[in-house]
Length: 253
Image (cartoon, rainbow, N blue to C red):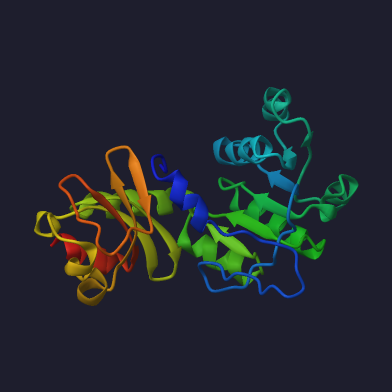
């Protein structure tokens, strides 16, 4: 879904670095996520459906090691050429997990969304084995609450979150895209309304009127980062603002 604004989204992405002085980052649920070491890391991906295999391939493309696991032999065989370290085993068997040394990975992702019982048990076993960061996929909010209750560091609802994201973007006039960076705080791409055309940023008083800070302006093929206060807004400009979604919507009202 993220396409055009990678140049500045990447600057806002969270980086986990191994440091005794660093405080772990809170997840969307407010839990504290353990930090990951810097540099090349080793991940385990359990469940190689469309979501799990996509995550595994992306991690590999970005230079990390991936231990991929699925109980389906045909699926494992089909992915063997793309995923070098792929194993067929039952992730609900703690001895099988020990045999592949899964406790030594930096993080594990459990993606068996269609079989919640197995998803839950695999999550519990990974936590029991001491995997420092366990991220689990859920299909419903009830499943998410259960997985959080057993101790999963982060639980994602990819289909629901994607649907909510698309719905919010389509429902909000003038929104191009947005990225939630914290609870109640988002970076939003929004078409500059006509009332701002011909005015400088300081004259627009977006911070005072809407609680929004302009961090970049898209103009044609150019991205103006940290624009000066005397920058004049032109027709066709796209403002990249940080603030509450509700305030960005008020700008378009």
